[in-house]
Length: 135
Image: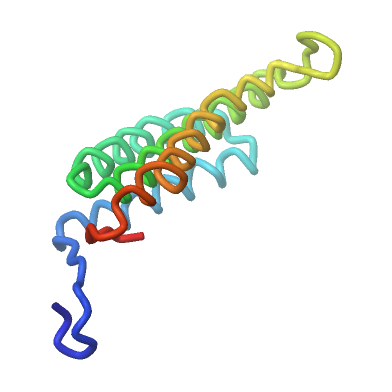
C-alpha cells in the first residue's frame, strides 16, 4: 500500500528502471538514425532495442497487463525496424499487389501487437476485475 493514498502500489526495482531508461536511449538512436538515413547505426541499434524490450517483457511476465503491453511494444519495435530497413534498402515502395507494397509487411507485427492488447482489454481484464494489475 502507498502510505499517502492507501492504494496498492507497483514498485519497479531500480535495475529494471535503469534498463527501461537505457531502452529509450537505444530506441531514440535507432529512430534518429532512421530519420537521418544513417543505415549502419539504424541497423545496429535494432538489436539492443529489440533485445531489451524482450528482456523487459520477460521480467514483467508475472503481471498480465505489463506482459501484454511490453509484448505489444516488442512487436511495435519489430514492425518499426522492418519498415526502417525497407526504406533503407529501397524496397518499401515496390508493389506487391494493387495498393500494397513491401512496407505493408510491417502491418503483421503491428497487428500482432494490436491482437495482444485486444486480448488483454477485451478478454482478460474483464474476467479479472478484482485482481491487482497495473492498468
